[in-house]
Length: 429
Image (cartoon, rainbow, N blue to C red):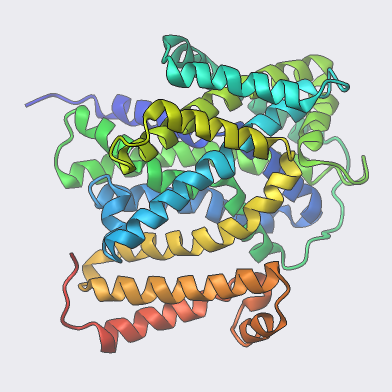
């Protein structure tokens, strides 16, 4: 029997998981939210971390419980549904949202402050050229950069946070965000870490098994312990940046999310800090983008059974990502919000159903609960997105509709009714 160095394995896997989740694009949301909530930053922090930290942990645990494949969870609703959902998730963390955001963040934080007249098209084209080079010609330099980059960026942020907490840049201001707690939950969607958790959970499970932990019990325990390290690190970063942002309202008027991060770095660490942050963010964005592009190209190549080659898929993803990246971070966030308001409730329902799996003996419960949730979120999002009065009026009768959680009560009712009355005989697949 192989002898384990369990604590060492937990730490190594925990830091690997942290590096997977920690995209530098996530830097822009906590301080901006903190700026809006001011003195209510603790309430906002709790809401943001539930979705930005807690849910990803549950997502990894659910995937581990399902044997490392989120497809197995989706299959309980139906194979076609599972394919559509996984495709939507890959598109969201890939060419539609996350990859373009890395490029736009790189331009706005790492290039524009130093070269304000340079064309974003040129920089973003160069960015995706470099990205595609590494995606098509894997090179150890990416791993080397990643190994040194994450600690460097983390140390920079910790210095920024500690100094900013000890010597605040300004005073706390009043909250300007209605429904602070629920609005912060929705803002936590923007990290997209929960989507990444269910897509990448299998990588963690495979890594754990490769170290000799083979039983389901061992895998789940190791996943939980290593995940706690990852989310602990995320929690410190998110909480600290939110605290810093809560002290900025008196310093400047309207400001872009990326510009706020730059301003904080300059105020707290000076010009040298701004330069180092710019370099670290650019490299972090690039390594994240390479990983996401590789994941997307592999997925679509496998989905088409080789009819769409890995190379062609990578090129298509890069071209689409470039076009969307040119919109800029704030516009991409505007596109992101309605998509995430559809995907997140579905992920939440599937993850929770999986975690209480021993009480859900029928795939029928999965189907009823998930499809009811899907119908409600589609009606809600489409009604608000296209200002359809009849749909908005329909949703207004549901509890929590005013805070973007109209789906919650129907989902709970669908689960209860299907569990108690509709789905007593059919067993889960």
